[in-house]
Amino acid sequence: QVQLVESGGGLVQPGGSLRLSCAASGSIFSINAMGWYRQAPGKERELVATITSGHSTNYADSVKGRFALSRDNAKNTVYLQMNSLKPEDTAVYYCNALLQTSATTFMDYWGKGTLVTVSS
Image (cartoon, rainbow, N blue to C red; front, side, top):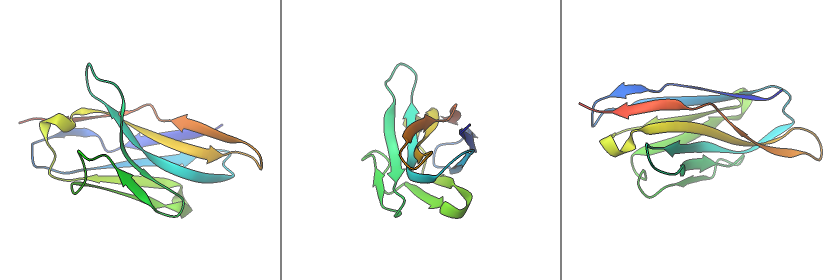
């Protein structure tokens, strides 16, 4: 059984910072890419940032220069540092991971989501 457990969401004022964490646990052979997506009310889920096993990162244009994604392979954990937050960053943030669960099996997993609210 594989789980992605997210933490770190909450309420923050515009210009503030938050750090999200996502830890993968369970029967994991290896972890390929991990990342974060978000879904604002009334909008479709969109990519925020991803990171490969080799630590290559990809960011949405809307967060470049403000968000930083990193991973700790030893802990199967990724961290999303969010700075200079804007009201338009308000959304439910979902962790995503492409995991290898056996020598021949790769599966896509999602966390349950954590709410980030940017408001004064």
